Amino acid sequence: MPSTELFDPEAETRDLADQKRLDEPVYRKQIAYLFERSEFYRDKFKAAGFKTPESVGGLDELRHLPFTVKDELRASQAEHLPLGKQLAAPLDDVVRIYSTSGTSGTPLYIPVTQGDLKRWIHASNRSYFAAGIRPHHRVVTTYNSGPFVAGAVHESMIALGVRMVPVGSGNTERLLTALERFQVQAMPGTPSYFLYIAEAARARGIDPRACGLETLVAGGEPGGGEPDVRAQIEEAFDAKVHEVLGLGEMSISMFGEGPEQDGMNFLARDYIHMELIDPETEEPLPFEDGVQGEPVYTHLQQEAAPLLRFRSRDHVTVRMGPVDSGRTGPRIRCIGRTDDMLIVRGVNVFPSAVREVVNTFRPDVSGIMLVRPTKRGVQQLPPLPVHIEAAEGSAPGAGLGEAIEKAIRDALIVTTKVEIVPFGSLPRTDYKTRLVDYSDAES
Image (cartoon, rainbow, N blue to C red):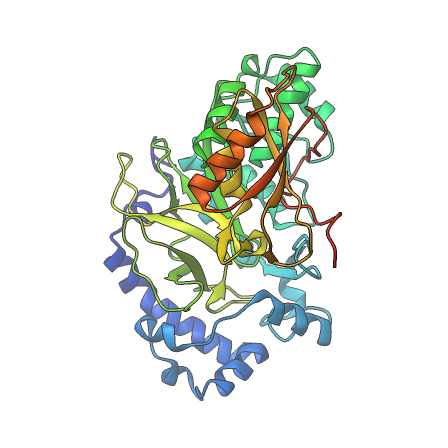
């Protein structure tokens, strides 16, 4: 039975050097498994000059191995049905086949064995427990059981022992009824959906603060760690927001944020090894306070489709050292994704960073915004068009757009053209919010 503060105290408070010592033999065993079972990685090892598991070496030599990227996996699955050359377990041993959303290309299918699923659940239970969910809680779930890996959250909650009120996505009216009627204590979901739920509740005459929620577990997109977004959600529900972060190809909720709300602890330890690299030079970076980089992940015990040095495309800021609950670092905050990044005259711009600036102008704005590039592609010319919703019932002054443009320019060194649009005119979603819209862009 978990302690009152930690689900897995020994693992969650483990020193990084001790973790590496424990991971070393497990990693070497996983490499041997890849040589034996994965045609995909046998080919990659051969191309990189590694002929045996012993030649690969240990974790200190991991940086010499090639990266794995999503496009490689997609291509393999397209050419070798049904699950690509990366399938390393018998198909009969696969108990779930999830998929990615396909927003950045063809969906990637993600197989897991019973053992893989068990490890996903155990690691994610550490994260949900850190985020304040307890076995006696009633929990309403906003994720469907599929096709995305977020569906495994449902199984993880059952394993944690909570009282489930499963609703899923696309049922906001039913969700509001459940919140009002059952007084649930916890709800996982995306930050943008939390804001939409609060907005929909007020429109129906329901006070979100009276629904009894204690903890909101925010994942699926950046935002839950942005101070103004977090404050907006917490104010709406009178509940604490705790971030979690997973990666469909690797595991659900590998990171979880504890009561300190000071970044997400890496809690998939024992099952996944994490590196940090400079996304441009691809050179290793140290885990030190304030360092920014891209996490790269390696499975340590995966059976169905293990991944080696998988590039996350997330951009994170690192925090180190223990927190009051005793969990050890590293902790991260995700500041954006390469898939969303734009380059405006040599300046990297994450839409989530633009949103952070926009949110400093609440209550004059709703906090909902959309970047609308004039042409397709990463490279953009200034000014970058940004549509920003006015707050409900407000009539913003003529200078609001110009003030936001100046604030964005001062903070992000990029020139924008802000258009203030009426409240309710930008799209809402019950899953991930799109921050960039190319529908009016030239090819």
